[in-house]
Image (cartoon, rainbow, N blue to C red; front, top):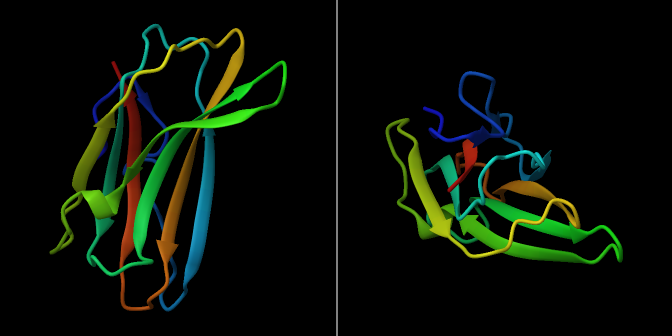
Length: 134
């Protein structure tokens, strides 16, 4: 089930990102954030499946901004499935984090970095959706 919001980067209807059977590693996805959101985001949400609390197996999403005059990059907020509930029986979970930042798309470019990390072939990590909300 996708997160209900004004901005969704990945949804269950459009597809999901997870590992092929028996594969391990880090899937990294980058999604640009529109300069025309129409609101100042203050919550980053993550809809995921993570059936283990074992270290090295999780889903994260970061909101990152880049200063367009200097190229400097800063992470604003990170949401980690390890800070949410362990999922089971094929049911996704939702976790999020509130944050404060001046949304300034004239001087900064914003994007979301999503990592799906699996170090155990027995773990099941999936990202279903991420969302910025006001």
